[in-house]
Image (cartoon, rainbow, N blue to C red; front, side, top):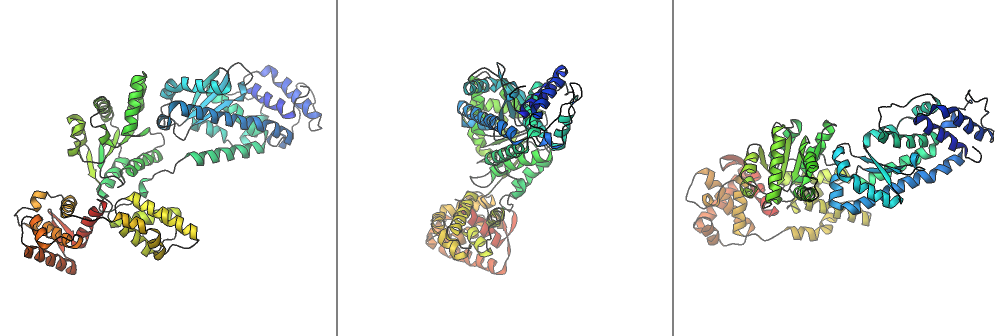
Length: 570
C-alpha cells in the first residue's frame, strides 16, 4: 500500500483475519511486509510464504506507528466520555446514578469508523439487568452518541467484566494471536463482544506505549469514579447496636431465611452502613448474586418515571429479579398509596421466591402504621432490631477505626476525649476527626490532647445542651423500655423503683431543678425521697452493684452511661 505507515497494514491485516476473510490475508501480509521492507526491517520472500517477522516486531513496533495511533486511541476515550456526559445530562443525576453508577464505560469502535454507522459499545456493570438497560436506555444512548459523533450510530451492550477480562489478556497471548494467522474467532461470540476486542487487541499488539497509556487511563478513571466500599466488618459494635448487627450479619450469611429484616433507629446511628455492608458482603461472598440498594426516594422516583414512560415491566424486573433488595428510609413511603402498592407487590414477589429483603427506618413498626396492615404484618413476620444512639464503647470504636483507616496516630487520651465530648451520633465524630486531621496538617504538629481541645472547642460546645426533667424521664424510659406512667406510678417493685431512683439521681446530676420539683415530676414524691434515691445510687456506684431495670439486670455504671448516651444524642 503506497504511502501507508508500516503499522497500518498490520492492524488492517488483524482486522481482516477477525472478520473471516481468508482470501485477503496473504495479500495484506505482503503489503505490510513491502511497507516495512522500505525501512529495512522485513524481507518479503513470496506471496504464499509469510515473511520472517522478528520477535519484537509485533509487541514493540517503531515509534512512528505508536505516535500515529495514539491520537485515535485518546480521541476514542474522550468521545466516550463526552457521550457519558451527554447521557448524564439527559437522564439526570439521580436516575443516572441508580441505573449506571460508577462502573460504566462507553467506547466508540474504530473498526467500523469508515462505514456509514459508527459503532458505540456500552459496557455496563454485570450486576445490573442488561436486557432491561438496553430496552430502556438504548434510544437515549443512541441520541446522545449521534449528537456527539454527528451521524447515525449502532449501539451494542455488553457486561463490563467480559470485555475487560479480554482487554487485560497477557502479552504472550496477544503475540500468539498476532502470529497465528490462520486462527478463526469463535463464531458463537456476538458482534458486541468482538468490536471492542478487535480494537483493544490491535492496540496492545501494536505498542507498549499504548498498553501503559491505556492502563493509566483506566486506573485513573476507576479511582476517580469509585467510592470506597462500605464493609460490614468495619461496623463498630457495642451494646447500643449489637442486636441490629447480629440480625444483619445472620441475614447476610443465610440469605432469604429471615426476611424481611427491619433496622430502625434515629439518624446517624449506622442504619445505612448496615444496609450497604450487607450488599457489599453479598457481592463479595457470591459474585454472581443480583443485588440492588435504593433509598425510598429513589424507588419512588424510578417507579413514577417508569409509570409515566411505559417502562413499568422493566422496572419491576429490575426490582423483583434480584437476590437481595435493600431499601433505606422506609418511613418515606407513608402516605404514598401508589408506591406503597408497588412496594407491597415487590415484597410479596421476593418473599415467595425466597429472596432477602432488608429495610431501614427512623422509627419502629408501631410508628409505621401508615404503611398499611399488609406491609407491617409482613415486617412483623421477619426480624426487627433497633439501634440506639452510639454508646461510649461504640463511639470509641468509631474513632479508633477512623484513625486506623486514615493512618493517623491518635493517643488514647485523645480517643477518649472525642468519645466523651462528641456524643450525639457517628457523623459528629467523623466531622471531629476531619477537623482534627486538618488542624494537625495545617500546623505540621502531631495530634495531642491540647491540640484536640483547642481544635474542637466549638464542636464540643455545640454538642452540649441544657436538659429538662422531661428529657431525663424520656431517656430512662427509652433506655430500659418502661412506660412513663410506670415511672411515675406508686408501684415499688424493683423493675420500676430502680429506674425511678436512677432518674432522680440523673436529674440531680444534669439539671438545676430543685428537690421539690424533681419529686413532684416523678410521681408527687417528697424532697426527702429524692435525697434518699440519690444516696442509694451513689452507694450502688461505690460498690459497683448490679441493679434490676425493667426485668433485666444491669451494671450500675453501664446503666447510667446508657441513659447519658441517650441524653447526649437528643
